[in-house]
Length: 365
Image (tube, rainbow, N blue to C red):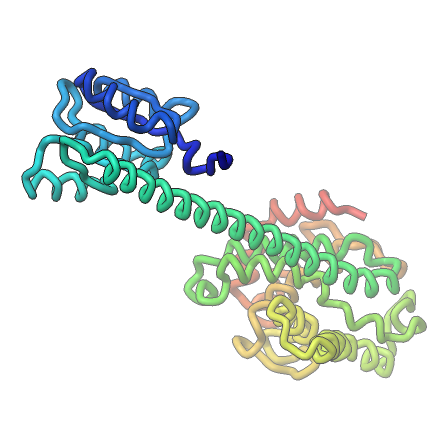
């Protein structure tokens, strides 16, 4: 004799208030399936909601207490039991009875007295349908979990790539310390604060803020192309040296563009990194570099980065200067409202001063 299939090992719950009917149905099913019985709706619900629910239910309609319709409705309303197929097994033969049962979610409707071969065939059919549906649900759950896992991996790879690139710039300049971490958190704080603002809400979606946070460390990636004699100079630059230093914005953008060309595609998570690297030295009044653009022509990402970068430079100690206090730096930031910085970004900074201080302390050099 062949080994029984998974469907043949299924557990079937028979629910009927008549002992003879329970005995008859058990006798017909027991050679192929495991059989459980319940003589009322309340007991049926306890069995189905137990540790080992059945794969299929044969359910009488007319019972004292909870009717078969009541039991069906309760099971279909519960996410844990709604996928168990129910076959109504009843002496009620009116069309409206069958229509009501199917409307409640029953899979089939068999009238008594039953024809054993037909009843067994219909039970087998519903078990096969359930097995296929369960397989698809399991596959979908697996695929969803796999997509989530690979998405997390991709995000981690992106983070590592960005931080690795940013570290190249940081290793060239021993004074930068935790600058890239602090500015990263400053930018996110400003973006979250400005998210509801009418001028920014079209741009500052949750996804964009996440990309801003990831991209901010690349704002000075172009410094890898600046000669040490200028980058590490312990003092003010000459006019010629400053012109060379200003090239770090173009070098940073071009480095990211080159990486994209090597991949043969635009990379979404680097779009903001290019903006930040290239435009973060622009000023609201048009006196910045590399293009000297002004106002809203400057990308929002770069406007946020500009304030974060300047604030951190002011409070940080360098070979040629001591770091300012927060209060002193805040005065300079406010003085730059409408000239160096977007006025609304400065207003956000003023509201967030405690958070800026906390970020500076958390990532102190």
